[in-house]
Length: 164
Image 1 (cartoon, rainbow, N blue to C red):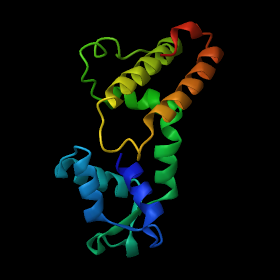
Image 2 (tube, one colour):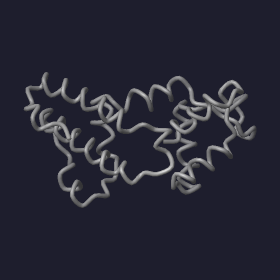
Image 3 (cartoon, rainbow, N blue to C red):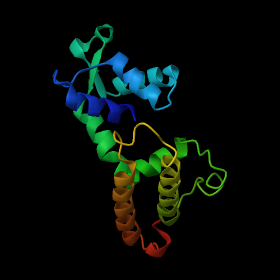
Image 4 (cartoon, helix red, strand yellow):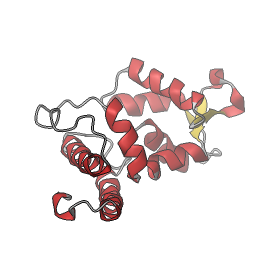
C-alpha cells in the first residue's frame, strides 16, 4: 500500500516525483495504518531500493518510488511465483481461510492455494476504505487469476476449481 500511495502522490506532485514523507504518513494513517507500521515499511522499502530519498538523505523528508518499487506493486503482485512465496509470510485473519491456506508442496496444491489466497484477499479488500482509488486490488486480482489459470493449465490442474 505504501508504494501505491507514494506512486499516486508522486505522479501528481510535479516535483520530480518526490513527495513529503509527512504527507505519506497522513495518507497511510487515513487508510488505518499505525505510525509504527508505516515507519517499519518505509525502512524496508528503502533497504530494498523500492523507494529513494531526495539527495539520498532521509532527513530531507521527500521520497519517491523507484522503478523497482513501481514494478513490485504494479506487476509482481500478479505473478504466481511471487504470490506463492508471500503466502507463507502473510497472516491469515479469517477463520474460514486460515485452515485451508496452509503449507503445501506439490505444484497442483500450490496453484489451488494461491487462488484461495487471492479469494481471501478479495474478501479482505471489501473492508478497505480510503485507498480504493490508490491501489486497485480488484484489477490486480483479475490479472492474478489469469496468471493462475495459465499456471494451472501447464500443471494440469483442473481449471474449474479456480475463480470466484
